[in-house]
Image (cartoon, rainbow, N blue to C red; front, side):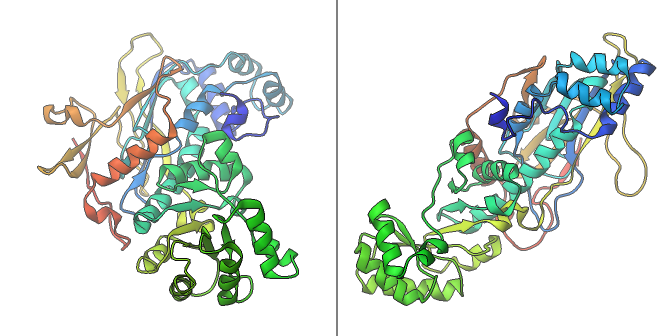
Length: 442
């Protein structure tokens, strides 16, 4: 997979500069101190879920694997570091041959997580692991936030399909990642062609208000679109008067008209009126698609409306008010020395202020009740209890620097649907509350 597959500009040679400077200055100091080779264990987790969220969604893992593979310090990158005196000569020499050779374990993409869940574990020398902190967090924090919002919207929508259409509301590269994350969370299609190209997500789109305004009459615009795209197209009917537009749309396309889209007004009221009018005109199979700054609450409020699909943009690509998951990447264990085979010792930040962490390399499992419904997220550092050995959540993603767990995006999407189905039913409630599963440390 090349750099273009990551959604990056083609003139960016690697992901190595998607990092903070202190990762490299720590490396320089550790190399000089002789501690850089100490085997280390870093874990990604969040201390709490965003306010009101009942669960999180792991998304972006596939992109993390691509980013790790492309984390290379080529001549141009090294030249930049040298020119700006960011690190010294020995560090530049070390970076020139950098290839991640460690192991990565994590929750499989699409799985749900809770406070403290070790969603990713990176093991190797301190030097090679510390460099990956920023790029890993950048991807997971963004994609998991979008996937969580998408999951909530999908639950609110029920069986009605959701269209991702937020590309114009975010950075052009973030838009591609957001579309991918939304698909993981349950959306069925995207308007973003770059996302369709890179990730094979179904794409949709017909016309905007500008197309209607281009023509002398609304009817002329409808006729032009039907002539080009066929009677099964979706006509936008709220540029002027909705009732007149619906009448003209059916007259032009006939009862075979695929759908009408409503993008403004009181969507609940307008949808009922449009459905009645379509039925009276004989277009009983014509669907109604609604857009206009929808979020999970607006979608839920339309549950009783005669709506067939939703298009969501701004609220989705901004995480519906929570654009990050506040995931952190913390050193939880390191070897006593740089000697091969030196034993690991747990380490953890203990300062006050709500930023403490739990030391030690962790396993995670999900305890279920007698009905197979998840009831507790169990996290431990010692032996895994016998009854939880078949409930372990982490899987091997990278072994000895080689990716071993790539999978189709549809498999990730299916996994999320399955994980959500195994949570208590209250997980999908939109009312504010705590995490639907408690976290228990064994």
